[in-house]
Image (cartoon, rainbow, N blue to C red; front, side):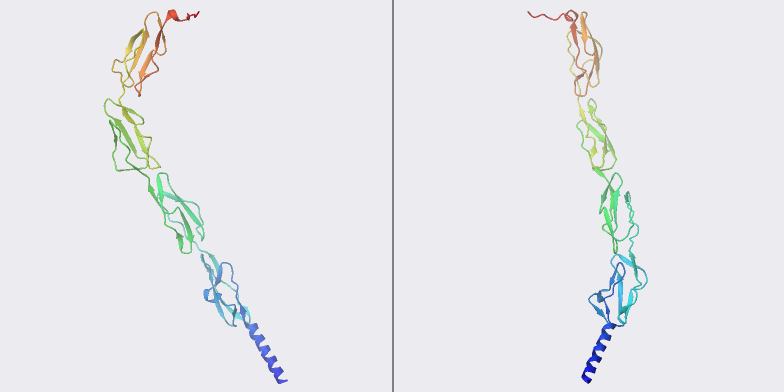
Amino acid sequence: MCVYALLLSSLCLATIVQAQQCSTPIGGPNMNLKDEYIIKNTFEDGAVVYFKCNVGYQPAGGSGKITCTAGLWSPVLLECEKKSCGAPTEVEFGQYGDTTAEFGDTVKYECKKGYNLVGNSVLRCEDQGWAGREPTCEVIRCVTPDGVVNGTFTPLEEIYEYNSVVKYDCNKDVVRNGSSELVCSEDGKFHPDPPTCVWVECRDPVITHAVYERGSRPPHRYKASVTYSCEKGYNLQGSSTITCTIDSQWSPALPSCISKSSIGNPSICL
């Protein structure tokens, strides 16, 4: 009888002890137990544990401390909110897109026209702030353009910045073929291609039965023009005035003088 009573008493005592323990507590959103409590499955009556906000979150009110009392945990009053990285750094000659600047957000930078982005174009809001090398916007530069034979360009610099203009001139007696101005462009090169300085001289026209009326005399240089008519009894076919072009050719093509007697009287083959 005594043995039975002793066993019953021990069983009751064990039940009471078991009832006073607490299981692992569950916190609110975006929080976890501090590291030293995570490995435990049960906690004794009166035990005190602490919750902390997850990475990227910070306390917004309340305490992370709770207590085990008679098998129950006191309420978790801690509140956690996302951390803010604050406004991204302004970049001279650049801009960035919209962002709430909260943990996990990203921001993308772009440079204004004529500038290259150096560094990371995208930064990420992490636990300790914006992560990544802050970019800079550097002006686009062009190397010195090619020179031309029988000509020069100005100004002469070691480095030219975006939108810089160089102007080409040809020496006396040669003619520029191409644009006189080149611009430092977004690809770091000058456009259009440099011109050439060419010697232009058209041969003296030879037109049978033609009569010189007015215009250039040899040598015929660039843009020189000559006007012709035809001898009596001949009709002019083509343009009466021709001009010496940049490729040392007459334009339009040389005219011809056609005998009036041959017009309307084609040869008859028997």
